[in-house]
Amino acid sequence: MTEAVAGARDDGERRAELAGSLAAVRERVAAAARSAGRDPAEVGLLAVTKTWPASDVALLTDLGLTAFGENKEQEGAAKAAELAALRPDVAAHWHVVGRLQRNKARSLARWAHAVDSVDSARLVDALERAAAAAFEAGERTTLLEVLVQVSVDGDPDRGGTPVDEVPGLADRVAACAHLRLGGVMAVAPQGVEPREAFATVWEVAQGVRATHAGAVTLSAGMSGDLEAAVEYGSTVVRVGTALLGRR
Ligand SMILES: *Cc1c(COP(=O)(O)O)cnc(C)c1O
Image 1 (tube, rainbow, N blue to C red):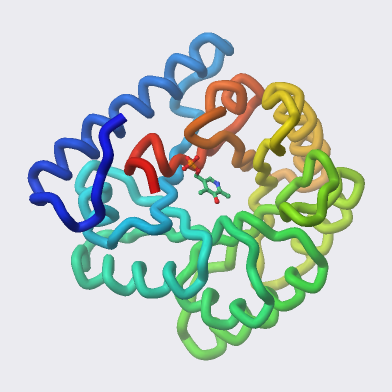
Image 2 (cartoon, rainbow, N blue to C red):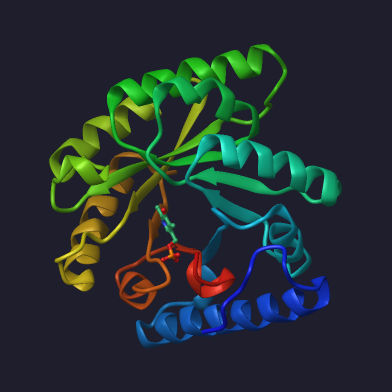
């Protein structure tokens, strides 16, 4: 893998590097989909751009990507504003993918399309209040999409809600007027075979879909385990390192 140094490269060189890694990631996703008997078009790509500069995000939009993930509210807010200045004609969708403090909800409601890492009722309530206030202030016109993060091993330190609490949390999101329940998200825990983890997540996702027809998203798979996730029904892989380089 090539080492990429943020901001230290000529734009054309970085563009070629990103084009190459994007093609490789797309090929991995397509191969995994084909071997699982799935249509590669069913699997979306969220580029996780944390720690990388807005100039890289701009180059990724030139390559056709529009969905980006950040794990820190402040970094995401700044990058979203920078991208809007660099590419004013691009309608990018920003996702928060990391653990989130409730006091950041009001700010993220101004710039984020989605929060993929929702794992508590208190966070759901804070996001609903924040999204409502953002609508009121004319800062957003679309519902804030929410994914419920599933904790496969039940370890609360890593984020996510235990499997048996997912349906209740999904119901709570669905009842909020300014949120839209998109589905579920998961990170395969360390020490668990990814296929085993993603099989569990797939069952949880099916349960949520059974009661919420619009909650079709299953966000699973990262640079190291996207093949296993695609095999188990992932509809969005979240890729950082394999696209942008080592952080
Ligand atoms: C950083 C991050 C990713 C991307 O991980 P890579 O291994 O760099 O592809 C995906 N999901 C979440 C929640 C992350 O924090």
